[in-house]
Image 1 (tube, rainbow, N blue to C red):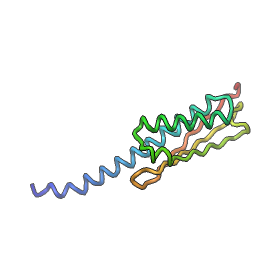
Image 2 (image 1 turned 45 degrees about the vertical axis):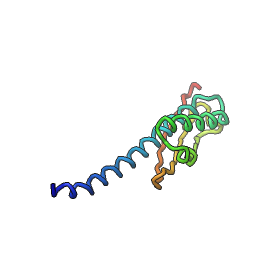
Image 3 (image 1 turned 30 degrees about the vertical axis):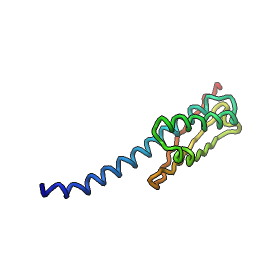
Image 4 (image 1 turned 120 degrees about the horizontal axis):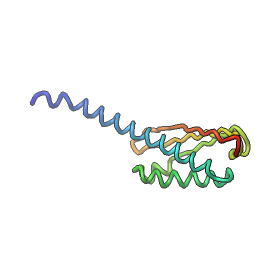
Length: 116
């Protein structure tokens, strides 16, 4: 009975660690899936629109709040111009401002086929 209060700091630490891990996992999923949507389009402009739509839909499915979804920034960098071209390497960085005050980020990268 006396040992129960000693475990309280461990439980608090594990809960905090789980929430950070969940945020990082969500950022990784959003970066990967929004980039997949981007590279499946025919142009850079439509790619940006699709990536934004993917983030809104997948973010909701992952349980992000509307405030967290609105705080997401997408930074897409390409090795070629236009991005959707043969042999292009596209890099997508996502940053999320979580409700708990933390900022998490993730990066995904795709290499487009030379036969595009």
